[in-house]
Length: 541
Image 1 (cartoon, rainbow, N blue to C red):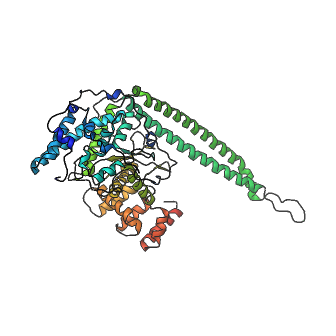
Image 2: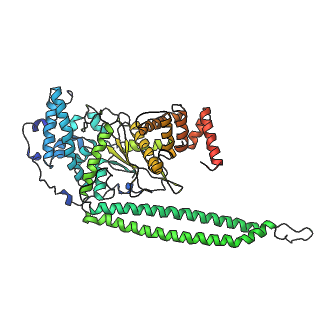
Image 3: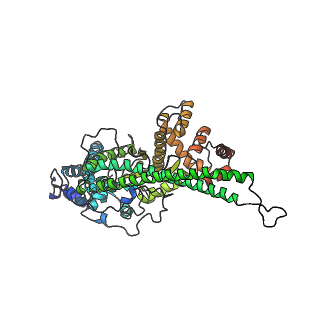
């Protein structure tokens, strides 16, 4: 990093420790501040009426922000924190000025740990809703020292759109911690048992998730029963209409013929049809009553979530989530990846469309859904619900995204899954694709439960995996094949094994217009389309 000049502010700080970095008190006082209104609150709610992600009209702001031109940015980012900021400052100074490669490597490892210790304080500030711009961008992008970036790179970050204008569930880290802190989103589940006492807001959030699942279940039953009654009414109407159709009696002008045998049978069945209609209406009334009760429970619990703790921050939830996010960052990089957490031109070499901004990720998610229309769908009682996952944007140099949770364990009906996407990957498209593939696998596996090796998408793929006598993680093979499915097979480039293609074609079908295009390009796709027709005719699809 010889070409990276030392920041003048940092160089001046090397001569001594300024008052700005005096260790703060052990117990921060900013949690008592009132939270700012969250502009992205609606994005946590699931809207089953949405059919796709919105097209992205603008990827970058036209006017760049001036945050990174502030000469006091570094002081503001580190100022007012506890001793972790002082340690980070000292290690960063040593790292940037060290000439010996071995010592530099040691400082680099120590800097990684110090950075995460420091950002834990920033996560708590973000969770309270009160965080200054420099601290927010240090957490959101890992931009701790703007002079570590080139002028062109600073201009790129200064034009990243800050607000969630599309109200979709894609979050930068500061936004994610803010939602966790406010209790609008529960902390991610972990395998480790929590040792801290749960906050009231977290407990109410769990109850709310369960109630929302019951509400959505009740809504699905109301819709299904309403549609069933409508079909029965239409059938009755058509039957009654047939009663009034008569031929004219030969030789008698204006005289209609008697009822036919079919019409007599219809009249005889009218009583049974009406009783069936009344039964359906009674069942619909019961389902509506259950829905109103569930809706009342959700409304009551939502109020308790909003008011629990008197508006205080869910500190324990943020602390748990921070540990989860730190683990997410490690997983995006892998053991051999670049774990350096600070954004620097030494490692950052991305263009505007390659950077993992919210708009670029949304555009990639939309592109995937245009090929795999059921990518974000879950089936419940024969109804396919589109439930896009929460997407957490991790400021790391990782290569791959992944799924942390397929859905909330307290609400398997309508809760969102959670995927993590690295912002500074070599290929954003691959990073998002691997995350969606992992989501696909885990949702299918949870749906099949104990029979995941026998039924559905995972079962059929696992049986092929076993038949091929392959070694390793079956999910990794699936993710790699999913990439080929989206990137190659959707364009008619045959890269998958024949049996895998059959499994994917059935359980992860392309959009119909893509199927029609492929059908005329190769015999193998034509045969698969014929299989669709055969299954549809036998009601076994």
